[in-house]
Image (tube, rainbow, N blue to C red):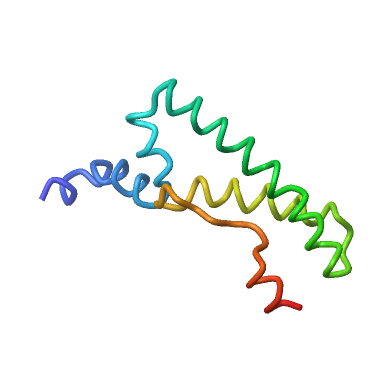
Length: 98
């Protein structure tokens, strides 16, 4: 009923539905940031060379693998509602594309 009288009342709910990362920031603290930083460095150590290698296997310059790894991670982090996210080139996807 309130949303019919005031259309602006639904905006925060609408925004949180389409950008779930904003909702997860409510309970974010320093310990979570530290753990996420360590996880990000660990994943980057594996994902960056892997993305470059898969780009070269596909006959593309390695920089396209870097673009894929960086852009997909950023987009997935903002628009995915799951806290566990797998993105980037994987063996199954690469075999299917090849």
